[in-house]
Amino acid sequence: RVQLVESGGGSVQGGGSLRLSCAASGVTYSLMYMAWFRQAPGKEREGVAAIYTDNAWTSYSDSVKGRFTISQDTAKNTLYLQMGSLKPEDTAMYYCTLAPAPAQPLVAAGVTSWGQGTQVTVSS
Image (cartoon, rainbow, N blue to C red; front, side, top):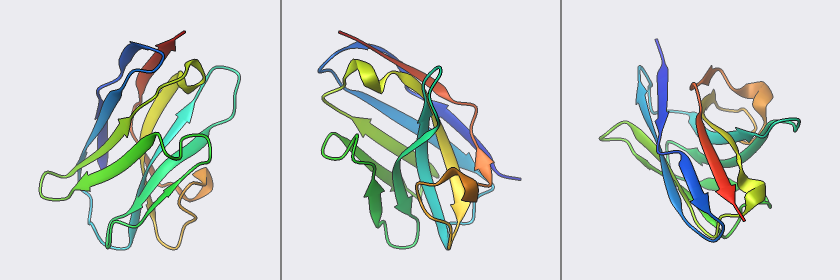
């Protein structure tokens, strides 16, 4: 059974940085995308960063490209999201997810497992 547990969220001022972590268990690191999604109150869920577990290929939404970096440590079964130059519009609940290929990496429809989320709040 897959379990995804996020940590590292918190409150930060605009321009600051945070690193989110996702501890995964029960995951077979083959033909899978792991991704970070976020959802702010009153807004649609948005896929922001994804990584293909087999070769570490990455994809980012335009809203975070150049500011966020997704990475994985398969030996530690951990996914990371390094967030920099944070803006108030980055405020949201952030979720770690798993989707088997050939799912589209930043599309929620293909996700089969979700973590419980970690809150990120950016003040101006």
